[in-house]
Length: 431
Ligand SMILES: Cc1cc2nc3c(=O)[nH]c(=O)nc-3n(C[C@H](O)[C@H](O)[C@H](O)COP(=O)(O)O)c2cc1C
Ligand code: SF4
Ligand code: SF4
Image 1 (tube, rainbow, N blue to C red):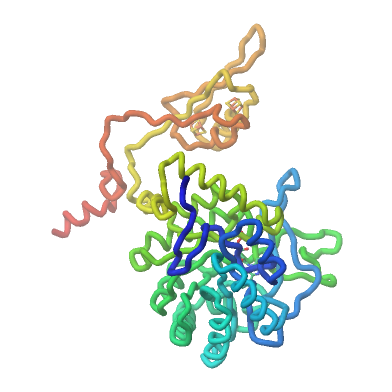
Image 2 (cartoon, helix red, strand yellow):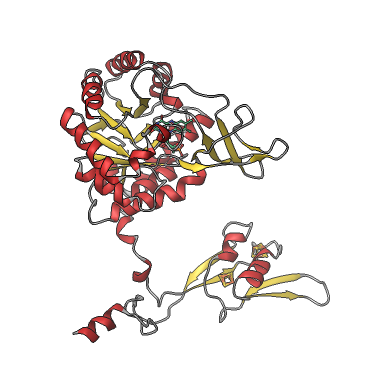
């Protein structure tokens, strides 16, 4: 049976599944029930200076799929709206009662060293395992010079991280904002400031949809609205890329990463881990489906690890990183071609329309003159292997992309004679 326990930047946890800093972790009542359900750790809802933040009503909105499935979730909530003392007292008690679970305290304060120096000993006294610096909240707090307003300026990230390393012995996890052009910049700054790890992503600036009668976006607060933070399943691809960018950056390689963003099942978690996350954090999926989703996560990951022969999490963390590269290093001689399994095909014609209208006119629609029955066949010579037909086909597995034996060796764009600026040609010229 696979061992799910981890040690993440010195923090021990019975499994890699943590609840992210958010409403599910904002009080002892929730956190205790999360631990009872099996979560390995929590990042407590962000604490700040007193008086506590005040929230508006309403606060959430969603981007729905056709069947009212929540694809993306948007919120305009601030950090904890309870006093520092209540939070610290509850954290102390929960940590005492659950010594085998990781409790990380998320913090957000203005950029004044004294404020950090004052709060850090109080947090340390709770017995918490680490701190997470919330440099990512995209709404409300940046207007007050906190959250994403710090995370978007690498110099501030480095400065505050250094203060925390100076005034606390606890491991420091820096939570990054995705609302930035190149996430590697704040990650490098966090490392330079002495961060023990980074976590990402926080939420993405968003407006989900509008009430066109009232002419106002959701969530509506007395006839007005504001942009919120986007999260949930829809942000997973963005988060995965950002995690990979940091994992493969030579300047931050080896820096522990806690992956966050759209994780809802064991497979999502395994993907984040394969791209370099030593543990994962979950918010929206737990908000929508409850704490018990961790059962599927633990069970599924454990079964998959057994199947693959992985005995511990560390054996596959980062395993997909070497296979994630720049476009220019992809093999120009690699070729796949679509293949339709006629037995599975329901003759809907979607692949034909997609290829005909937007791709390479590589699917033939053949109509039997007598019966009028249509069949669809790939014209191999024309197919560029773009995947569009496979993506649009409603029958899973009906279209497969089959690698071709071109007989040609690996050749990337820097070596390709069709590249007028081929880097190796340039080198030859200058030598
Ligand atoms: C309602 C709500 C409140 C949140 N509050 C915080 C917070 O106080 N501190 C923080 O660092 N992140 C906060 N987040 C962001 C989450 O911790 C997480 O980074 C983000 O939701 C992406 O993960 P997900 O896709 O699993 O939800 C909040 C998210 C939501 C939806
Ligand atoms: S892979 Fe692309 S080019 Fe080939 S048949 Fe499908 S849609 Fe057309
Ligand atoms: S989209 Fe799939 S099911 Fe529909 S015609 Fe094409 S191969 Fe057949």
